[in-house]
Image (cartoon, rainbow over all chains, first blue to last red):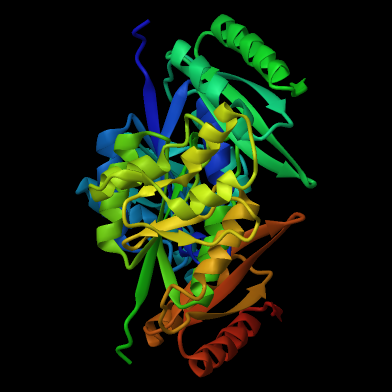
Length: 247
Length: 247
């Protein structure tokens, strides 16, 4: 198989994530959805609301991956500088998008409030829109960079509307088996299984749930029959090591 | 004030975060602790268990920041390649650390299990140790790079032991005020307040909790008296905009 692999980078923009004030959950949601669409998230960056940093990081990752998805910094306040920074990264003007402006103008507001809301209509010249079913202003895309809100509910609405737009390849499937055994007990036979199955990625993830230690073994690949065969071998290996496998 | 500012990068190493299987929480814990110690996390990278990627990213961020903290990939299985990759990044050999090896040998095990556990004693030549009060093998540091476990409880134990080792500067303090107002309603006066107080960073974070929309305003700076004054002005501004401020 030489099917094309589609890759993506996620860029989380926001001081609040880097200060520890806010727990990011958008990366996981994006990674899960893109995975289901056959697109592999190869890296994520969390960066502050600093224009030079946003410009440099966007230009670095958009050259390296098929898709870039960003979250955060597209609201109406002074610290929302994502749209202006993306415009600068692409070397184009920041302009008012008539569709967004019309949507925003539908709801009346005092002049200074309207002026602030209209900041959310400013997009890089040439950008297309990303639907926002929550009723707020849409996100936008330019080139391969897709710019979404940071508020998780709004981000998820925008992400859902990307489903029909992003082309993906073969979906990386996964199967997992859990064993209440220390990783070191199964490390040697597991290494052999990985060596025997180079096309499949075997991950070993130790955990500690309610004081009980164990290991979850995750196999990933595009061929389900191969994964199922490997899971059988891993299950037998766990039994041989004295453990009780659980799905 | 021209006090030195200390910066850090966090590198989260692990396919499971990029696949969406696992929700990372280590970044937030690290950012919160470093903030309390007077060290600012300026960027975070989430990268896969691929040696070339780890080497490149570590060499990039260690040159750019005072400290680098990594999580993940230091267990006993075939997919734990962080220590070897860090050694490669520093151009030094990967060697068995006698202190870790002695700790591991204290608990008896069959030869193949012991061989796997001893993988956790392999560190870059010249590395020092990061205590692990959970009883497992320690983490390590080399140069300004601090390498910790990915399992959150173990990571936190290692992070705690770094407290007395990492030198920080003035702590960035924060105060916050919440208003059940749309961001756009306060965006204009807020922009003016930010312009009038360039030494203080004002962040505006919209939220939607149980169907109720609002905005949390966060001020950050090293001078508490200045922050308190600014919070008073923000509170007055919220009242003027028709909102009810909450701490």
